Length: 340
Image (tube, rainbow, N blue to C red):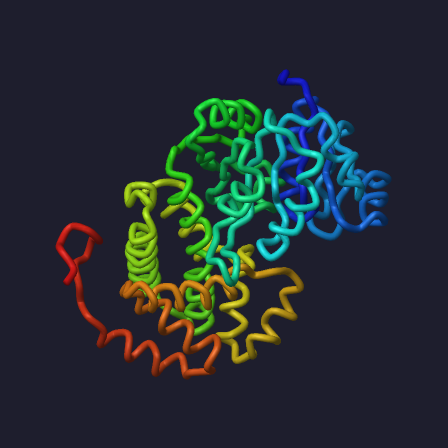
C-alpha cells in the first residue's frame, strides 16, 4: 500500500467535504462519495459544495461520485463521515468493496440507538479484519475550510494507522495529535454535543461569564464521569477531543447543537428548532440515549437529566435550573475525592 494510492471519503456533508479536500490539496486522488448523483455531478462541475461549504474551492484531484464501487476501488484509506444514523447501512453497503489492507477512520460523532454502540464499534463489528481509527477534536468544518489554525486527534490502538493519518492530514493549519484511547476520544466527541445544547439554551437566556464557566467545567466533569464508567481514560478529557472540543462546541454559533439549544431558549419547540437548522444535530438523539444509559448504570448526571426534561418534556428552564442548583455538591475535580 503506497502513499500515493487513492483515498475515499464516504459522506458529502460539511466535514466530509473538508477532509476530502484537505487530502486532495496535497495532490492525492480523493473520491468523495455521496448518495445524490446529481449533487455529485454539480460538485464536479462547479468545484464547490454549495450546499454545505459554499465558497470553498475544491482541488482538481477530488472527484465526487454516487457510485460506491467506484469510490472504493483501490483506495488505501476510507474516512466515514456520514450521519450516525446512516453509518451501519453505509458500511454494510461498502463491505463488499473493502479488503483487510485498508484503514477505516470514523469522523462521525454519535451513538446508535438500540445498541448504544459508538461508530467505531459498529465499523469494527462489520469489518473485523480492517484497521479502524477515530478522528475527533475542535474541528468546526467551516473554520477548517477557512484554513484557521486548529488541531485534532487520531485515536487507534494501531500505531501504523495513527502515523499514517497524522502524515496524511497534517498541514500548516491542521495539526494532528495521536491517542490510543479510541473509546475516550470518541465518547468525548459524542458527549459534548449534549452540553452544546445546554450552552445554546443558556446563551439565549443571557447567561453571564461566571455561569458559562460553571456550565463548561461541570459538563466536563459529567462527561468524564460517564466515559470512565464505560471504560475510557479520564486523562483523555483534558485534551483536544475532550475539553478542546467541548469549549468550541459550547461557545460557537457555528455549532449545530448550540443553535438547537439557542432556538429552544428562544421559545421554539424541539421540532421547530431542528427544522430551522436544516441539518442533523447529533446531540438531540445522544441526549436521550445517554440519559437512559446513565440511569441504567447509576451514573450521576444532573445536567443531562435536567436538559432532558427541558428538551423532551417541555419543563420550564428556570425551574430545572433552580432544581439543579439544589443538587448534590460533590468534589470539584472528578476522581480527586471518592463518590459514594
